[in-house]
Length: 366
Image (tube, rainbow, N blue to C red):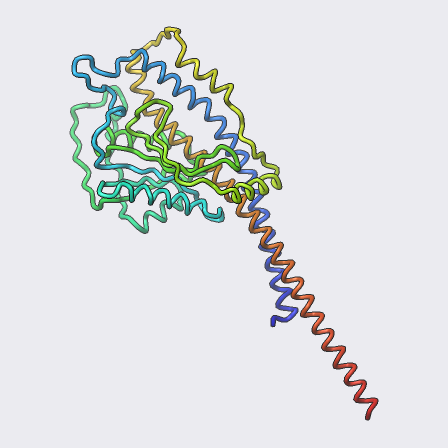
């Protein structure tokens, strides 16, 4: 049995660990509040951009009346031979099963695409490390410097990218997930759009943690390209938290002073939807078809960026919950060790008293 000194050392060590986990919980709670505000502030822009595109659809000829072909390349649907999967994970651990569930959803989608070529874009250090261990790395295809501008040479021919494996990891993340900006996401989206237009990929999927509130979040896999209907995505639910996990998240949020209710934005959404469904004939300075063509890549970038900031909020919610559980476990361990230490100390005192009494009795008999 451990001595009193050893038990005191263990109790001191667990107390120090509890201080660290409590501090990490409060840091995650503060970052969660900022991430929630960031996610909520981006929703009106994303909703209005969708409404503008819906309005343009009614005014632009997206289908060639003579050939019947779709004019915008992001709306073209073809046989799926090569898919691109974007996986958004956390930058670090200490968040329970957050990263594990994200990676499992990504691996499940890769298995569903078995027999097809798959390119992976990993956003977040944990996803990068996990996929780098399993698959070979490859660089993004070269992007012409005039791409996306009116003066681009449409007749230029670029060599097809040679694949080294059926599943491969593309490029490096543009920045740490916490510091990623919309401009960096837009540049990544430009590369993806370029690959889709050249026929290097036939579909794009996005796996991330959809965040509504601390207790309302789920891991989903969405199909971004080809775009079937604006404002709607083909969604596959991969994982939803259990009742026990939601209760633990609610307890951690309340103890940290973080709200657990989902912010109601239905009124603002209804006002925004009227823009696209109104019978008013809007006047555009440029050709509606040209405006639609330029806004489509930005619409795709907005979807990816919104997924990134929602994943960041979900990560901090998961980390706050995990650190709260760790602090509670540390408190229980301290109580158990304290009880054991008191028993050992009491046993030692009893032994000493017994020895003194026995010695005194022996002296009296002598």
